[in-house]
Structures are given as structure tokens and as C-alpha cells.
Amino acid sequence: MISPRDFHAALAAEGVDFLAGVPDSLLKDFCAYVDAALPPEGHVIAANEGTAVGLAVGHHLATDSMPVVYLQNSGLGNTINPLLSLADPEVYGIPMIVLIGWRGAPGVKDEPQHVKQGRVTPALLDAMEIPYRELDGDPAAAEEAAIWAATTARETGAPVVLLVHKGAFGKAEMKRPSREVSESMMTREAAIQLITGTLPAGATIVATTGMISRELYESRGELGQDRASDFLTVGSMGHASQIALGIARAKPGAQVVCLDGDGAALMHLGGMATIGTSETGELLHIVLNNGAHDSVGGQPTVAQQISLTGIALACGYNRVEGPVEAEADIRAQVASLAQVSGRRFLEVRVRPGSRADLGRPRETPAENKAQFIAQLRG
Image 1 (spheres, rainbow, N blue to C red):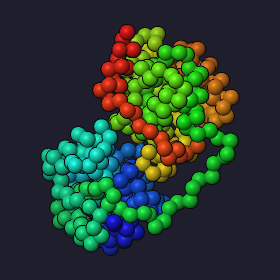
Image 2: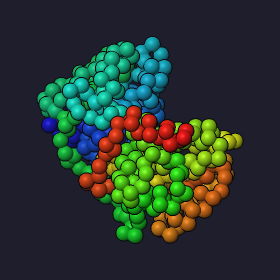
Image 3: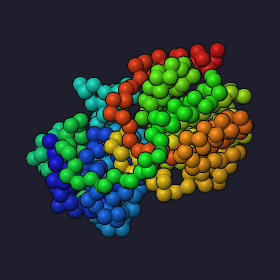
């Protein structure tokens, strides 16, 4: 396997002094290493993949050095516009290395939302006319690929991609110390159980991708609750709130709830402005904020360094509450907000991490959709 430290050293030897991106499960050890090893001016965990490209472009314009952008291939779509309309050699010609974790690579078993994305990733890169090489875990080949990528990017004045296979990176030689968390703070899974148990029966729930959808699914089973009113947004990070708003606007009077994550909310923060300025739709937007990208390695977000409630207020939500973290406060606010109309927002602070034996939905996305539609339209 590839040593994260050695691979970063190979990039640094080629003039790379800045990295920005969105953490990925296949790159988590590399991400953990650079997050711990680099100074703040050398690394930014970006809100989304497109903004990471923008950061890389700005750094290159200011320094003439080679930046690296890292992401999961599920986020490739967020980069297409800035890569083609900004960094492309037919526009500004910005050299950069794009390190992509290849979820759903052909022949590798993966979750449903990654299968097609993985299959078409090389074709997307070909269509974008971006050259790429694959990293499969061979250390010598990885060093050679770093040299190739930097050389090619400089010669062409354009982005170059390194596609990383599952298991390519070994364990991070350095990690940021774990953040201290109060023992009294609830786990996210316990908070989800509390929230669903407090909401009115039959409330329509749209859950964001990653651990929140998985924990909602598990908690329903543990409590013997019906799952038919739950839409599990297994992909499309950052869009669950807009799915919920679309449902709420189309179903006047329906009690619609979005269980969102802090990383997802930050990824497409503009969605909060759309919700806050919507004149219709009964929507309760709950952000479970643990300050971490839990699904891909636990790298930090900035969500506990800013005021999500302040943003919601500024966006025009009819009522905004939080942040809350005590069980009694969560229950009281959910119960109260469920009784009022309009677009409402609640921030719930929870403990980072999840249990190791957390399961995944047994139904396919198509099956989830079918039962959800039957319940929603029934």
C-alpha cells in the first residue's frame, strides 16, 4: 500500500505546497495525514469540491505553485464547471493535480449510489479531455504517477487526475488529535431516535446521505417504527433539504422534516436561502451538527465554528432554534416546532462518531422510493 506520508513527500518534491478538498473514504488516511501534518496555509477542507478547485486556482495565481484538489468521484460533478470554465487550458489554463477516490470502480462491490458513478468516471474524464492515471497501491508506481501528474499539468497548463483504487493507501502516519467532547452529549443515533419518537406519527422524513440515513433506518427497526414515510438520500450530498422543500411545496399541509448533517448543509449552503425565502411549504429543517465528516473518516467541518442558526435567521426561516444538545431541550424544541407552521430550523449538537456495527438499508433505492411514494401519495 501507499504511505500517505511518502506520497505527500513525492508531491511536495514536485512543488506541491497546497491541498484543498472534500474528504473521501478511500482517501481518508491520506486526508488525515495532510490535515495533521500541514500548516493552515497549506491545507483547506473545503465546503464542496467546486470551491476546492477555486481555492486551488487562487493559490496558483498567487504563487505559481502546483496545487492538489482531492475528492470522491461522487463529487466530480461539483468540479465540472470550474474545471472546464475556469482551469481548462482553453480558458485560464491552471495546472493542478486532482486526486479522486474511485468509488464504484468496475469489478469492486459498492453501494448502489456509487455503481454507475464509478462505471462512468473514466468516460467523464475522457469527455472533459482530462488525462488520468490510476493508483492501485504500488508505492513505486504512485511516486512515478506523482511525477507524471505534476510534469503533465505544468506542460499542458491544465488539470490532471490521479484515480485512486480502494485500499491503495495505508494507514496515516499522523492524525489530528481527537476533539474533546462532553460525556453528556448525545450520540447522533440517540438524537435521531429521540427526534423521530417526538415527531407526530406519519411525519414525512427526508434524511441526508451517509450515517444519518443509515442511523434513521436502524432506529426505525429497533423501535418497531414504520419506514414507509422515510426517504433515504443515499447519494447527492447537500441536496436533501431541497428534496424536502420540493415535497413540502407540492404537499400543502403535510408535516415534512429534513434530517440534515453539518457537512451536507455546508456543501450547498445556498439551499438554506431557498428554504428561508420560500413562501409555501411546511418544512422542519433539523441539522445534526457534530462538526465532522463522519461517513468518510471524521475529518472536521467548520460547522461548530460558525452559527448555523444565525445563517438560518438571515435566510428568513419563520422560526429558528438552537443549538441544543441536552435530551430535554431537543425533545421540547422538536415538539414545539412541529406545532407551528412555515419553514422552521433547529440545530442539534451531537457527539461525533458512530457505532462500528451500524448496518445499511436492506432495500434498494428503487424499493425505498416505491414504498415512500405509496405512503406520500396515498
